[in-house]
Structures are given as C-alpha cells and as structure tokens.
Image (tube, rainbow over all chains, first blue to last red; front, side, top):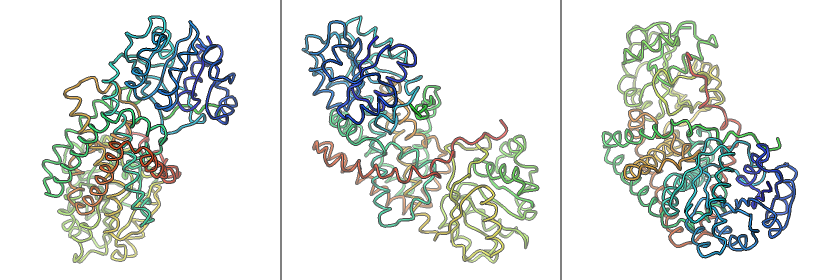
Amino acid sequence: MTITIIGLGLIGGSVAYDLKRRAFADHIIGVDQSVQHEQQALALGFVDDIKDLQSAVYAADLVVLAIPVNESIRILPKIMDYCSEHTTVVDMGSTKRAVVEVLKAHPKRAQFVAAHPMAGTEHSGPYAAVEGLFESKVAILCEVERSSEASLKLVTKALRCLGMRVIHMDADKHDQHAAYVSHISHISSFVLANTVLEKEQNDGAIFDLASGGFSSTVRLAKSSPTMWAQIFDQNAEHVLAVMDTYIQKMQEWRELIDKGDYAALSARMEEANAIRKILDRPEANAPTDKGVKVGR
Amino acid sequence: MTITIIGLGLIGGSVAYDLKRRAFADHIIGVDQSVQHEQQALALGFVDDIKDLQSAVYAADLVVLAIPVNESIRILPKIMDYCSEHTTVVDMGSTKRAVVEVLKAHPKRAQFVAAHPMAGTEHSGPYAAVEGLFESKVAILCEVERSSEASLKLVTKALRCLGMRVIHMDADKHDQHAAYVSHISHISSFVLANTVLEKEQNDGAIFDLASGGFSSTVRLAKSSPTMWAQIFDQNAEHVLAVMDTYIQKMQEWRELIDKGDYAALSARMEEANAIRKILDRPEANAPTDKGVKVGR
C-alpha cells in the first residue's frame, strides 16, 4: 500500500514510522511545506520519497493529513480534488467540527475520514517523531456516516495497526470534550509558565525550587504556538466555556483561602482526588512520552 | 547514628530508607500518630523500632520531622523540649516562615534546622515511600544563622547523603518562591480536576479523550488534602498573590481568544516556551516519580 503523509512532524512522522515497521505501508511519500523537514524525514528514514502535493495525493491509497488545523481547512478541498478513485484521506487534527463543515458539499466527501488520535507530546518537527506514540491510545472518528464503508474500514485498520482503540463521536461533541480534557490543560500550562517566568525576570533564583510537580504541570507550555493558536481559533466557543468554568472555580478557591475556610477547601481537594479513577486506568499510563526516538 | 523519623509517610519513609541503605543511620526509630502506619513502616523495614515521642526524640542524634505543616507548628516546641544536648531536629515541611517563627524564642533553637527538600510525588502514607526520591534534587535551608554550626553540619551531611544539592534562603523568600513553583502548580491541578470532573458527572464519555497531556497536568490533583490545606493556610499571603497574577493572566488569555487575537496569543505562547530552559536542565529530569517502591 502507498501512503502519503502531509506534514512531517510529530504526528505525521510517528504514523509513518509505525505503519512502515509494521508492514502496513509498502511505500511512503512525504509532503511538507518546509524543504528542510522533507530532507530530515528522508534522512530519518520514515519516508521513502518526496513529491509535490498533487502527485503525492493522486498516487496514494491513503493520505494522512497532519498539519495545523487552520491550514488543513484551507488545503483539504484541494486535496480531495486531487484524489484518485481509490484514494482515502484521513485528517488527524485536534478539532473536528470545522473540518467536516468545509468538506460537507465536496463531491468526494465519502473518501474522507475525520480522525483525532489522542496522543502527542509537547515536541514538534520531524525529530519529535517517536515509535509507539499511539500504542494503547484512543482515536476518535467523527461523522463516520458520511464516509464510505471502504474508506472507514481502511482508516480503522491503519489506526488499529498503530495500536489504537477506535471510537466514534459527533464532531461538535468531540470538540467540546477535547476542550475539557486537552485544550484547557494546555492553557493552564501556558498561563502557569507565563506567571512564573514573569516573576523570574525580577527574581532570578526562583527556579532553584522547581521540582517534579512543577515540571509535570508546566510541561505542555513547551508546545507549538502555531499549532495551538489554530486549535484555540477553531474551538473558541467550547474553549471559552471551559475557561469560564475554570476561572470561576479558581476564584472560588481564592475566596476559600482568603477566608481561611480550609474545611471547604479540603472538601474540594477530596473531590479532585477522584481523578485517580481516570489516571489509574491502564491506558492513562501508556508510555506516550517515552516512545523511542526515531533514527536515534 | 540513631535517627528518629516523626511522620512515616512519603517523605519520612523515603528519608529513612535511603539513610539506612547508605549506612548513614545505624538505627532508625519511627513515630507516627497512626498505629497502622507504624506497623506498616516496621513491615516495610525502613524503621527498626517504634517508641513514644518523648523517648524517641531523647534517644536520637537526629530527629527528622515530616508531618503536615500545621501539626509541625503545634508539636515542634514540645519536640525541642524533649531534645537531649546532642540532639539535632530538622523539619522537612513545605513552608518555612511559621516554623522559624514558632521556635524563635525557644532556648534550644540552635539545635533546630529548617529545611525543605524539593521532592515528592502525589502519593502519601508509608507505601508511598520510594528509594532515590531526593537524588539530584534541591534542599533549601532557611535562617541557617540561627542554627548551631554542629546541627547545620549534621543536617547538610544527611541531605547530601540523600543526593541533594543544599542551598540557603531567607524563610519568607522561600515561602514566596514555593508559592510560585510548587503551590500554584498544585492549585491549577486541583482546579482542573474539579472543572473536568463536574463536566463528567453530566456527560460520562468525556474521559475517552483523556491522553498523556491531561494526565500530566492533573496528576497533582491526587495529592493529600490534609497536607495541602495546611500548606495553603500557612502560606496564604503568598499563595493569594500568585493566584491573583495567574487569574489575571488567564482572563487576559480568555479575552484574546474571545477577540480572535491569535497573533497576541502566539506571542504569549512563545514567551511560555522559554520554560524549556528550566525543564531541560538535568535536575528537572531526575526521576523523582520513578523511584523504586520500598519493600516491593
């Protein structure tokens, strides 16, 4: 099978690497708007060939689109235009409502599958690609009733080959849930970094005290601004709603500490402790961030 | 050397375990207000003996106090009263201003050292104790000019034996810095868990989407409410100041997303990316949370 990967970064590179070593792909064509990334992907060995967009799409059985979400919206109609009859396209972006919207009336809509693999790290670019990134993670497919049976089957098979559990969800519901379990985590990390770095500018020694807990909450603040600005743009409505709840709860915490109401505060922390039931599931402990570096 | 550990949980247990296997301690006496914890500590083998508080303090060359910070304030004057001439007491709590204040006028103040080892996990109790918890981490000593040379030397030696880098700091400055690099991380994690769990109550499927990024930002929400309520109590002034900055920045982010000003948002994320310089230091990657479970 010939697979074309558009966007040779963390997600695209990790998909390419695992589909190749598991013999799902016979030949992998890479496309990236950065010539440097294309050269790095060739050197790392997770693509076999580089082509222009039109030829790369036309030649593929499966096209995997793994670029920032606003760029996907812009380029997807053209990608669908370039498809041969036997080409399936899967989008791997973190928001799904806008992507299904933009292809709604496209004549080849049935050859498209909207997916979101719930896996990643805070790193980006070809060198961020890791083996086993998707192992034991969940992939969400949206609006599957508008994809053809053959395309849906092919994408599901590819995602299972990557080790993923595949579930289906309405696109708007997906975007709302993603705001809760992914987008607000990134915002809280970015804002925490902004807060602490501002303090550090005036008071250099502060990071002598930073330990494991700090590193873990602030890790996502290393994530790509380009990628995340576009996610917040496309998912603004849901993200704003979650931020409002989060800010309100933060203000309630502030009042409880200010009043010295530590009984009420303890009750909130005990409620928060219930997050154990989520974090202690086996799939939450899958080694997403510990994958083997490609080409090292 | 005889060492008495008061509080046989994550910190006390991990100290006991490493000081014993590195032959710094010949004999370890345990004290805990929970008889069950005392029995568990004996069974796990990180203490040799259990005694009542007064005998345990009197018999020790070094007393390590590792209990929630309000309980430390309450019990510390009595512990100092029980000291023999050759006993040194070190407090390991996460706040330092109140602890140096309460012993200010104590006749045996010079036998006391105020310390904060910047290490921990979100777990608690004797079974949370791990080998190597303190390896490559920083320990802050406060108001060292009020400790005797002999006591300061003994505590520094013990902390170095645990693998720690020892630095000195003013107690109030310590508490302010800890609010920035530890206490606000815990609050943002607890509040994130509160926000998402409330949503989940009405909408069960939400955690299908939770991945590595979510787990890492919310991990600290598993932490002990008793321990943290007392830290927020003792450090309320500094914690409130940091929360105000954090809430203000979160509101500014909210406005930028609402206005669709993604250029300004990207600039904030690029600023936040500078956190790399902290997280990529070797000591930030020391395996705090990966220690070997004691007795497994």
